[in-house]
Image 1 (cartoon, rainbow, N blue to C red):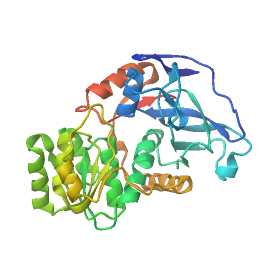
Image 2 (cartoon, rainbow, N blue to C red):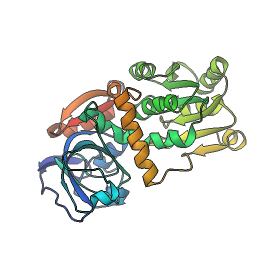
Image 3 (spheres, helix red, strand yellow):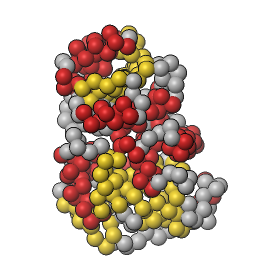
Image 4 (cartoon, rainbow, N blue to C red):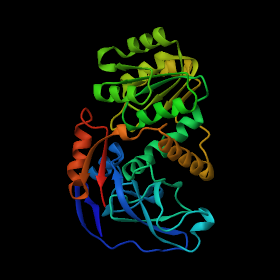
Length: 335
């Protein structure tokens, strides 16, 4: 089978590798149809900025197969898979929330080790399924853990994570959703998926933008930072109400400055959400996200701006990294 293999930092090649086989009674083999680039982790793993990892974020060595966001069809199953997923069967199309080698024609998954699998109904496409590792897995549990009905929510950054959280906030009952970014195309996407207001952060000083948001909408109950920049953090802290919560969902490639005195004296929480769901609840949340896509309550198609074939994975990774003003989510066509 073909797979995108990182042979050493900065070197990725698409080549023939052995097709995975069932190694335990809890394994499934998935024929991958679509995969998606996770901008920071995939590029940084490709460049050697991060250490190589495999399923479960465990360390591994070079060479390794890159990728972890994908959808596909189950083509083989171990005899005990249905102990974990009673309804799963060969031929099902699935999406997943895990860490495994997704830029490949086939993937092996142990269903006891991964966080969640969800089957895709007929009206949810393969490319939508590929985005659901982020839109339905990584972000939905942050929103579930943090958002209460009638909250005022500020989302910093309108990339794939921010666009997902905007929609989760609406679906979990938020009253007001405000978002910021520095790219107009992403701000337009935020409006399309349900933000009540958007602001181009490049047009304001950080503290000033926080005050503008407070003046227009009142103090925010909570902030989700998906931007990971010093300026975004200053804006969010300024916009928050006293004892508000600042949740971090951002990959960063360089150090950021935080207003420590304000954080220490004003906020009740600064960091990732607490109270993460267990595997059973995570699977239910993943299924809920698929249901929302099926019902039109979670729009992931808006995020997909470009497609590349697997043979052009290096070009896709570089383009996705260097051109955030042009692309939001890049899908890799496997099958």
